[in-house]
Length: 450
Image: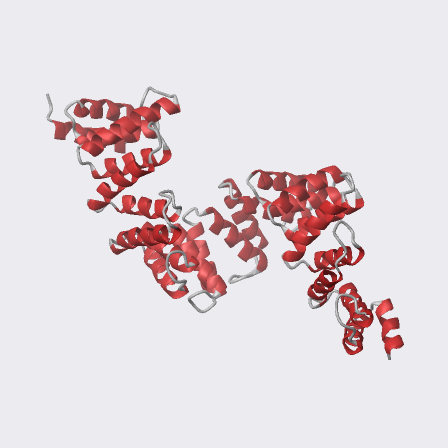
């Protein structure tokens, strides 16, 4: 009989040639002799359903975990790491975070950077339920160890930690340095993140051309978000010459990789006829796919489609459905439009309290129209208790953004002492600002005070 080394070498060759069934049979023969590599690879094959007879995913998970744990107990570095993953996610075994940590640490002791990164993520997500600061410190410790061994993933995660200021003091320049280390090794996510730094001028001098180059480099490595960004750059002539055909090409590539914003952008192109013939049916199809993938902007766009009858009959019930989805995900414009529908009873029962709630949510995000509306609600006690000081506050927030109705209303507050002390000079100033924008009542108020 062939010796174990020869069997394992033959199995590796079969695996490399994608002859997984033959490889599994060979590794099973070697595993009978407690060969740790064979046990580990059998775990891999059962975990990823390669050349094995068992097709039930749960049963495969149990078998895979048994092989990983056996290989781990025999000291296999990668087997230890996968045993940790099994305990972390409850694959084939009962979830046990402490056992996961123990196996990851044993693997890390043998310089497994994958185990170090897993520990870093585990502590970053605080799955060990430590004090937050302690958990973040441990996360940084493990990412630093991985990065010091020139692991690109560890360098990326450390870069993100410095970029976000999680576990360390925020430092864009240090983040850029780690992104560059990982990018030089060809890691697509690091290349993309570095592109974002050049795009925003974080840690480097802002440079649209360099940002585009990096986005395209990541896109060519099949990074879906980068592919969408490349499309956006081509569509808007940012860092590269405007080319709508290239934009559409990259949006389509990104969409094929199920990136939600790419579908949304394609929907916008079909809706507005950018680079393609205007086609609302196609736009709606793209928006619906984007919504299925979680695009909040597409939810808002579909709300507008049905609210304004774009290529379809007006359907306020559907408009409310999509506005609600977007509003609950924090989209300010959708919150405002939902509030309008609630206030007017369009597609939904009239509800002034709910309307006030959503106007307030949008107002907090800086939407000037919503700030004006919630101010009027406080002024008149619509859906909320009358509160002249809050009315004054929100009129001011909207007015400083240039809303002429809010400017006029703010002038009234100062003239009549509504929520603020009477100040005719301030009243004249705000009436004048509104008048300059063509507000008729403000023009009359200016004449009266002058």
